[in-house]
Length: 112
Image (cartoon, rainbow, N blue to C red; front, side):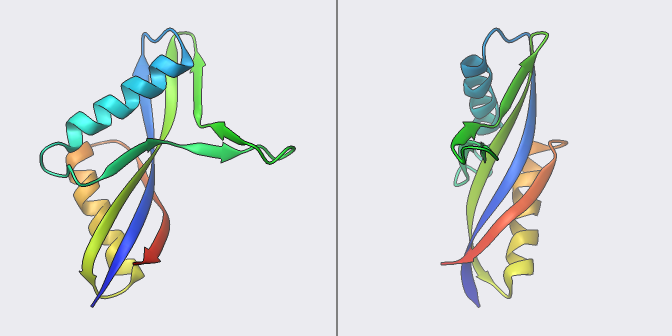
């Protein structure tokens, strides 16, 4: 049995937002509230993508007509998993149960 660090990606929709920075702050705050107390050990950060031209990191958020779509990165340690697939299923289950209908995608599983 091995310990793993599992990283998931999530899409968060926020309505009636004025700016990109507000949208990111609200998304992180709402995710933290849903994860607390059942999954308070999950680290929540704003997602980032790499520019295909300059390879610089960019915020993974978009605001159109006062509605935002924010990409979040969720990281969780999974202890005593049988394999990387098992660790990914455990993390997706724990985080998914806390967040409800928020879409999740496993992006990385590292042995720790």
